[in-house]
Length: 242
Image (tube, rainbow, N blue to C red; front, side):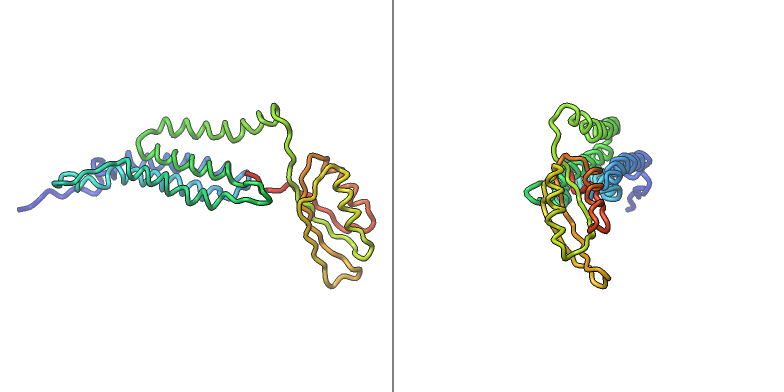
């Protein structure tokens, strides 16, 4: 007695052009979302979002087609939604690794939410809902890019975070005066790290000041650099946002 062999390339068993197209759409949409996060220099960028989207789409394909060979067996029941539910639960581990607390401020929430959204987009692609997947990807850009500008226009300004790297000559009690200049310019000093530089002709040190405030950073850097005891100044916006 011989049975008919099921061909490997067959739409009915989940391995046809439609499924490949769904995985390809998940690849494109998750790459677009990951590109936006990478452009913002976030902790989870292009590769993370792309892999999350593709994996979610594949797991949805497995949920729909991976157990068809056992459905005809006696006393066997199957609920395809159980695999989808586990995808949503599992993505929380990645999100938990992105979110962290620093100086009582929560960082990474938006990026973690974007990873969660990418998972949903991948699931929609794998579940045969391409229009919804494309629509949600477009809504992602509306929220992440558009809402930021909208909030800046209608909501009160919040202090920005900056990192001030400065090299200065030691031995003249210069650092307290420089820190006072920062506070006078409207910045709050969150943290100070000082490292002495060996091998210098003149005793020197490098200091990292983590600042928060809404003052003019250009004027602050210019005033600090005009001090004869300051060798080098670099003031950059902190990248530890959401």
